[in-house]
Amino acid sequence: MTEAFSNATDKLRYDRGTVLLHWATAVLVLIQFALGETWGWPGKPVHHLMVVTHLTGGMFLTAIILFRIVWRITWGRHLASLLSPVDRFCALAMESTLYALLLAEIGLGYAWRWGAGQAMSFFGLLIPSPFTPFSSGTIWWIETLHFWNAWLIVGLATGHAAAALFHQCVLRDNVLARMLPAGTLLPRAKP
Image 1: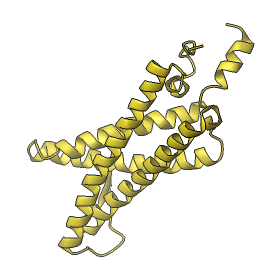
Image 2 (image 1 turned 90 degrees about the vertical axis):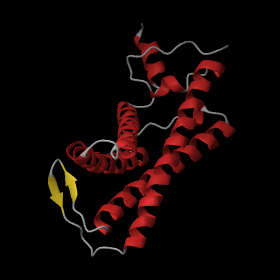
Image 3 (image 1 turned 135 degrees about the vertical axis):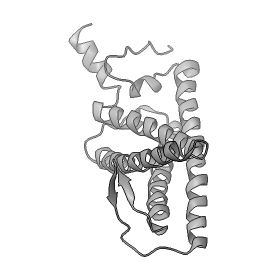
């Protein structure tokens, strides 16, 4: 592969930081969702381990999302100009919605834990609540919102993934390939 072809191909991809942050977010969201949906199944020691893992994962997700937003605003490569106006609108609307829902989910998670008067756990390091406990009714609402917001995130992320696969497999316009690691070959676009 010539250097000129490699440079032209790299300009059609997101930068390494964006790709890494995207896939780290996707993996963490799936793990968090799976833990949250299944931690009621096992007995106490495994249940506790799952909850602590979920809390630690939530703190990692907090850092990744905040860094991802800063990266997106500052150094991240923007490829929306390569899309049609309708696709650009849909992509930016989905991206903005997912960012907002993820931030809300993170806030609800902290509010649920700390509002219940419990410490957050990061690899066993306890971070106490910065405020007094909420009423049980308020905690129930926060827990319910956290639950349904998680389902909304997973539903929209599934739609996002399906749209990327549709673009890649049906329209063959290399949209999915833009978010793959740099060593991945881009298939030729449909003429």
